[in-house]
Length: 122
View 1 (cartoon, rainbow, N blue to C red):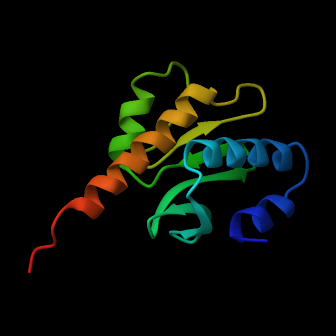
View 2: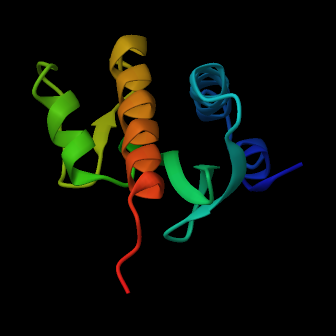
């Protein structure tokens, strides 16, 4: 197993099922993603960079696409979800819509692709 599947396996229900659902959704959007860590959290990584992490908390869940710009762009399209600069919170009463989650993964993947394509300054 990997970092993400190990993290999910260590959670109780319903968190285990919720996290697995979002992991599968992320892998459908970015099948080349690999399990690893990002900023100390179990995360899917793409092209060597953190792509997305979904964690369970006492209050519910938080999703982190490791980009304030990506969070801001998706939050602008949502109504009624709490967010921070780095993530969006949701709970068992109201899950993050699939379209919003897919947008987080897609936009973060595009951001990583653009960063990798830029020539490095010397």
